[in-house]
Length: 239
Image (cartoon, rainbow, N blue to C red):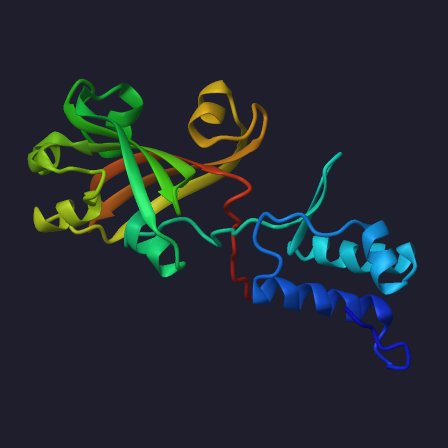
């Protein structure tokens, strides 16, 4: 690791670029701890203030993250948006990761007032409840609870949803998802979420509440919980 003291490029920025290159080449992998300021200082004979500035800039960009009492690590991969109407598996594959699911519940459920209101059905009507733990590269990143009106797609009960897709099954039944309304809010993980998704109690969780429609017909109401350290939300703004 060498810096050019005669270059017009500031030394802290040279160090930033070296760290970036090491991450891109895979020398520092996602989740790896990088050398401490002291170790960098001994290796490249650079002031700790300059090293701290380089690392701080990379932390601000989200490339590195500091963990109290542990050191500085390469940030874990983040998914830059929530799964859309293409479904979770397709979404994760598009990100270059391997999707998998673990079905925790798959059964007939009688709609509560809130579920019925969201789906435009009567309270007490039958819905198909599916609860799944979602994984990417075998790491849990989400927990999803889905409610589908039984009368529009009873065959959903016969699908192995550890591999199959709710949206694809709805499409085959003539109810292709076309639009969804969703609300995203940050909450704190409780004991159940911490056990399902890993992490600790009071860790930030993103809750996505969604109603999906086929044209104007509500076909699914879902509650989706994602680890805050796995997802970021990107938006495009214009005037």
